[in-house]
Image (cartoon, rainbow, N blue to C red; front, side, top):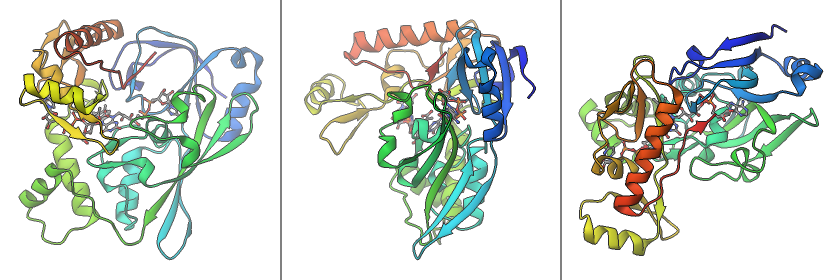
Length: 338
Ligand code: FAD
Ligand code: EPU
């Protein structure tokens, strides 16, 4: 096992923050994981499991061991009348898994095309976009417990999925390395184009016969039109979650701010578009040195070149304060702060 010291993480996080890890290694198998953790020197260190680094903000160097998960493999492990069960290694690139499923007519992940990052983080975050979340297609996952050093299996209910939430962000935080995820994918596609922008894009594309291929292409087109490509401008997608407020609070805000953007939730509450709140506070397109708010999407904070993680964090703090002051609404960060 090659364990490196003072290892630069700049190319391994999509914000391109210049942070380093005291120790760094890549694991490609369960045996590799066991080997790293068997050495007393590394076992005692704080541990950070790294996927594609697309939902992290480093505000300092990591004083411990960063374990980059490279467990690979995509396999159809079983099928029944209605479903295919596809198991993917945690180190597979998410979009490559989506493309594999689309090419084989396994339906369910098409609305989640082009989300950056790896398979292992997808249940951690319950990634979502364009009317779908992975919980809708998730079957089970396997995860290595850092203390008892055995593999545990979690089914859908065990993961306690919520909006960008799972058990791995709370009671099991920092306790498991997710090693594989199995998805239950439809043989007969259930097309989900309720997210208005998809329908409009399909029309523009001139699509007559709906297919998972067409939906995936439409989603990719929409994403490319508004989200900055991290290869070009450092970012980690939405920096904050869209906040949930009560219907009565929404109604009183609506009286004051007639064009406020909110969506009714099944529980009676309303989810507000945080991008709208941030834009109304005047942040859209603003930059302070190399740290800024994207000009097309106010929910996305960016690193134009050499911003420090703390500068981006401080900007996020100012945004949260001004949204609280103007609307009385608390924003919560989606990005994991290290
Ligand atoms: P990382 O950033 O490497 O890690 C994220 C967290 O998961 C960390 O806490 C890490 O320790 C933990 N982790 C990672 N792998 C494992 C593992 N194997 N076991 C245990 N813990 C692990 N997200 C959405 O939901 N929807 C979107 O539409 C979306 N759009 C985005 C657009 C852009 C341009 C960018 C840059 C990001 C976007 N994101 C979106 C956020 C991001 O892509 C997802 O959160 C993604 O799942 C992160 O995957 P990752 O492998 O990069 O995770
Ligand atoms: N809006 C503005 N100004 C802005 C940005 C947005 O007014 O600068 C308003 C617009 O009215 C727009 C609405 O907000 O109609 C919603 O914007 P958008 O469709 O871009 O989606 P979002 O709510 O900003 C969420 C997710 C994204 C996901 C998209 C598509 C969160 C925190 N973000 O963004 O996920 O891709 O919907 O489903 O839920 C991510 O999690 O990193 C992420 C990018």
